[in-house]
Structures are given as structure tokens and as C-alpha cells.
Length: 488
Ligand code: GLN
Image (tube, rainbow, N blue to C red; front, side):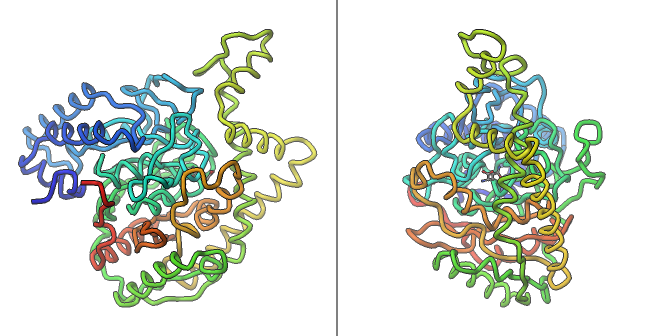
């Protein structure tokens, strides 16, 4: 018999609808797992009363004959989404104990779909990071090897799913924060086209890049959740696109015979470790067996995506984070002189080092005299990177390659060398800068038995095609079903 926590979202939802298990039972089970795996550091906040009340409401909807596809399914949210029933910290001391008066649109839409919230998940402070080590609330341990990072910034989300503390979780991806932790923890995640998911109530990092998406064990589960997450939100997010919500599960099951998979030569060049390359190559061979065709392509500005992203994202962050001034939100220094001193002390005390670094970089590149040299140049190259993708999509239907150059590294390994983290983002940044949908699917194991993820990037609004390609792969492989040793 499959354990309750080993069921996929799709399987659990079916059992809930057939009343083989109640939403309250499912919620209790996962709350219990969260309690007994505190040492992983995944959860930042839980509230059993809130969770069980939501589960009770889901059970009543089920009893009344409601057959909504996600009804009663417990999930957890990255703590970058504001929630009225749980504190929202963005992994920062700045927002310690902060309670939002409203739910983020993504949270609200998932609640309306009948999901039950298990709690809030750890993440890098304001989603800035690639290892989850920038959280003010402690590290998150990778269940495949607890001495290793889970990836970031959605590290808590990836660990909750990989360790079966939740069947699925939300994440956000600005430059790879859904795909990279999914890859490092052996789960599946998708970041939709920029603008398909509302950013309302997502604590802002870099607004022209931030995008929400689901993290789960299978592509099918991601399709179910993404269908609830996406959709226009014209009154609350002016960058949300007027593209109707879609049932992405309908895209699953189609043939991938003749699908042209473009493999950018820059994605398998020097710098990619041998284990990752081998797993990705094997995955591409698997796709060929399934009838897809491998096409060599080039994304010539791949390397430039690092400086471009690390100018644009901090620039936007420096502006977004100016709201944390000790007056409007969160922390305020206890002792200060005049107003400026209050700002200075508040922000020095409550922002972590990485956040302070980015605010400084961002302020610098936007300042008079440097704006043209850095920010404007970065914007121009960003456009070229997006154009390179359009050129590539004349030759292929989806693009595939590694998510990251290596498997998850050791906790503390990058020490206080932020550049080491930045460089590891090289393969997720280009798609982010172009606003394209991208996903990560488990495709093998590398060094030290750590999971390796295959990245699939699609053209705008091709989420269905990506999910189907991922689903096909998962029907033919079992990497996504493997469980970390020690997770029972
Ligand atoms: N690692 C990248 C950064 O630190 C991406 C983070 C993200 O996608 N939120 O900015």
C-alpha cells in the first residue's frame, strides 16, 4: 500500500474525491510529518487550527458533491507570499511577525480551488540567493544529504516536497528559484511565462522578473496546480497578462514524436561538471527514444546573462526594498536619533548582508553617472538575450539543458563568496531575463548520489507543451519517484 505522503497530488485528490481519505486526515498526516522533521528547517510557520479549519471546509465541499480537482489537497506556501492567516516574513528579520491583511492572489486562487494550507516555507531573504543560506531563520537541509544546501531561493518549498512534508508547494522564480532548488532536491517545478501568474501579494524582489509557480513531484501535479495559479488579475497586478486561465492537464498525453529539442552548445560547455553532463545527455537520449529530435542550437549571450541579471535584479530590488523604512512595515530600531538615523539603524539591523549588498549594487547602477554605463547597457543586452531565444525557437520547439552546472553543494561551501552563488545561476538566468516559461524535472543522479535536474525552456505561453514533454519523460523514467534515503 502506498503511504499517504507518497501519493502524488493527482492520486491524493482522487482518494479525497472518492472519500477514501478525508481532507482533515490528510492535513493531520502532513502536519505530523512537518512536526517530526523540524530539523530540516523547511517550515517557518504552521497553525494547526487554521489548517484543520480549511480542511474541514474542504471536506464539506466534497460531501456536497464538489469535484474540483484540487479539493482538500494540502500544500504549503513559500514565505514570500503574503497570507492573512499565517505570518509572512520573506525570510527576513525585517518582517518578523508581520501579518498581512490580505492573501496574495496566488494563495487566494489556490484556496478557492480547495487546497488546504499547511504553513509557510523557508526561503532566502527576499528571495535573494541560490542556497537558502540567506534566510534570517536558519538553513534548510537537503534531505538527500543533510550536509548540503537545498538550493534557493525556494529551498523550503523544495525540501518540503522532497521530504514528503507536503504533496506540493508554491515557489517563486526571479532568476531560477523554482527550477534550481527543484533540481537540487529531485522534484519537479515550473515557472510560467512572465505575467501569467499575478504578483499581487508576492513580496517584491525584482518586479520585471518575479514569477510564481508550483513545485511538486510530477509534471502532472505541476499542471494541476499551475492551472489554478495562472490567470489575469487586472485590478491588482498591471503586469498580469490578459491570457485566460488554462487547464494544463489537457496538454498531457500528447505525442512528442518529432518534437525538436534544441540543446544550446553554451549549456553543455566547459564549466558543467561531468556528472551533470552525463545525466543530461542520458535524458536527451531518452527523449530521442521517445521520438523527439535533438537539434544543436546556440544562445550566444548565455554568459552575459550573469552580469545583466546581477545589475537589473539588484536595481529593481533597491527600489522595491525602499519601502522597508521602519515606518510602513516591520522592524524599527529601538534607539535612534533623527529620522535618517532611524532609517539607517532599522535597515542595518534587519536586512541581512546579501540584501544590503544588493541594495548597494542596485543603488549604484541606478545612480546618476552610472545609469548609462550599467543599467541601460544591461537593459539593451537583456533585449538581445530575448531575441536570441526567438532566433533559437525558429529551429526548435523546446530548449533543453542542465538547470545548474553542478549538483547541490555543501552547506557553507561558498562561504562568503557571493560570486560563486551568482555564477551557478548561469543556465536559469537567460530564460528569466527573456520572461520565458521554464521547468526542471529530475533526470538522474550525480556526484555523491545527488539529484540532477533537466531544464526545459519553452516559448511564451508554451507551458502546456513543456508540461507534456516533462510528463512523457516521467512516464518513461522513475527518477521523480525516488525518495531520499532516511525519508520514510
Ligand atoms: N539566485 C538568484 C538570485 O539570487 C535567483 C533568485 C530567485 O530566483 N529568486 O537572485
